[in-house]
Length: 289
Image (cartoon, rainbow, N blue to C red; front, side, top):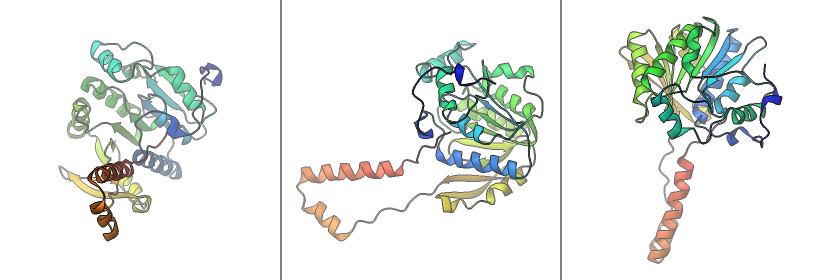
């Protein structure tokens, strides 16, 4: 495996929240619970990540490796994309910040050894270099283009063991319709069974979805400030995990009177300050991995 010697010298993140990225606390909790439950149940296998950016989620995945298991991450990093559409997406979203050396430095701040790194388009994994059925968990967060995501799902299906789990990012964002198309195509024509939906990620399996849902229901999510609901998609059960919404704040009579008595300019400034504080409280905490 690569070691710290291959990482460029750069300030290491002091905490996981220092790693840039979009891997939020809700999905960090879901990843951790599912991976820990697999370990507790004796489920073995490698972990695969397609699209790693700067290492938020890879660091968490590395936390759950057991002896004999390996984590493989595949990302273009600072390489050229293989086609014009993918190159345009990279240039718009990642090119200024994404480098392999930055990923390595971030990962090595929390782990002694790097994962196996494939610096290439995720389509490179279709060559069978990931042994069939060798993985217990696959995270897909690479290209948002339909053709690429459909290919990544095919790679995940081949790589996963009997009841392995796949997590797909950006399955419902308005700017990523290609991901949505590929995910729901896999559900309705490819045998992918929904397990869990969060605001950012779709979790599913080609194995026993009911068993995976039971694992999720074993945890008291409400105690952690979350809500867990159940829905159906074409007769198939699926769980929905979200942040618990706090009720509206009731103003005290003295606070209302103070706002009424303040001069108009001061009142506007006070209202702006209070609105800013409410918005900051409403933003979910960013999780690291």
